[in-house]
Length: 227
Image (cartoon, rainbow, N blue to C red; front, top):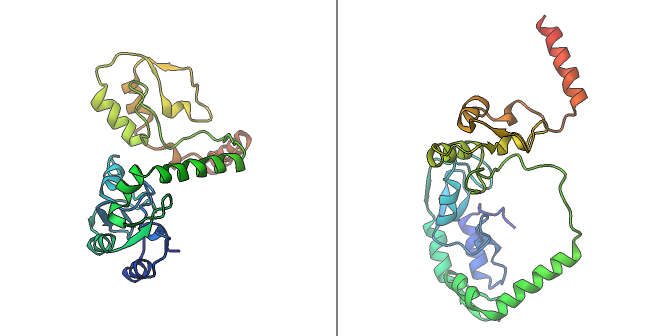
């Protein structure tokens, strides 16, 4: 199978012509549904137009597949044509449906909804509940309005543009996620805190997998080299 979001016209034509019910080549890697108004990025990955718009929201947008910087994209006309000329079986009722109509069909098909619910139940029963001990240090929630999924630059931009006049003392979600962070500490001046502490990404300077003793030893070795 080709990597999600990146495939050739030859691969697509084969998938469309062999009558297979496997439509994975036509699935957006973001929403995991059949492409809707597909567009292709300069790094070679394909997304629904609406999904790409979500990727463009951060101040420094990157591809959702390979994390390359997003600067250019074009309409995937060949793929759009194949969606209008290809059919596949609904996994719920088994009816043959044009791929460009599959989203609307599955949304209204009660047997497809049953198929999805059964899949969720089976997955939940077969996998133990796991709680990751590693905190999320890559996306953050706004401490004022609880909007979610901001990267660090996006959070700074959002708070500055939407909450600049909010005088409430809040917990910095970026600091709270760090090994040294205090999840109960409220900044008296959150915007000044953002300007001073978060003009750079900690990822550039911090190895989160290194324990405190190792970090101290490395700092001592650097200080001796500096001298």
